[in-house]
Image 1 (spheres, helix red, strand yellow):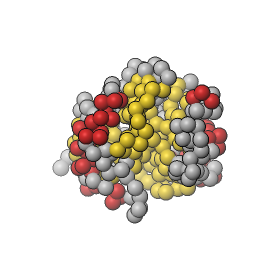
Image 2 (spheres, one colour):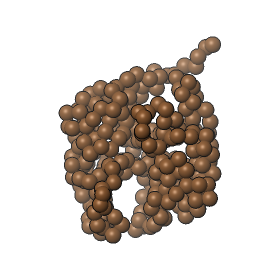
Image 3 (cartoon, one colour):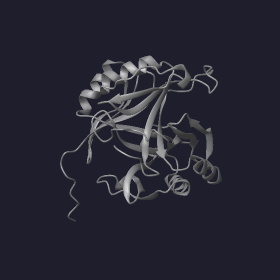
Image 4 (cartoon, one colour):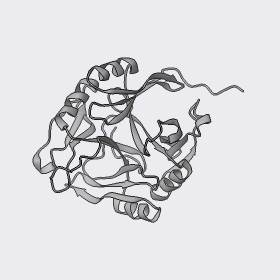
Length: 270
């Protein structure tokens, strides 16, 4: 990835956990990432790299003043959507019924960000790039390839994101997803993410954004993750676009891995 991301496109993902070093070790062994705990003036934030390019962040759960939250929040991955104006998105979010989790703030000269929640309760970030545009590698093994919102109300969620960002939504054109009412999030008519109902998830699952990482072999990554203490939430299974598994890392953060199909997807001749 070179240059900036178009507004509305997922551009970064990061993980907040109680034990930062344990997370760095787990994802290094699983995906081949390199990373270390950052300087204190940056809150220890770790920018993990693959082939020398940034792919994801890992940080220790803490309050803005540097103290440890009590109780600790659950470990979770956050999806960040690109924007040209984080303040405008935050204002539009409030007007559209969203909530502010973390107000707009500058991250040195790297960019400007906020963490928001849509009206159904799913949290996400927005990133206004400064010197740091976001992930330097996407759509290849070890890197982010897809981001998906699971929500209690797909129509309300679609209307919200269309109101706060320059995105469109449309029924999915992904083969095999029609029966689930899957919705594509589009930027310039290109699908950049998905929206699905929580009815496809275990009862009690809250609305959330989930990040997918590309892998060479979903089964072997699932096995390696399980050996390292992860929990398998959905064992590797085939779908029209590839083979995927849903995992929770040893600290409970949920993510998906997918080996995309090498074969071109042909339309149904009927």
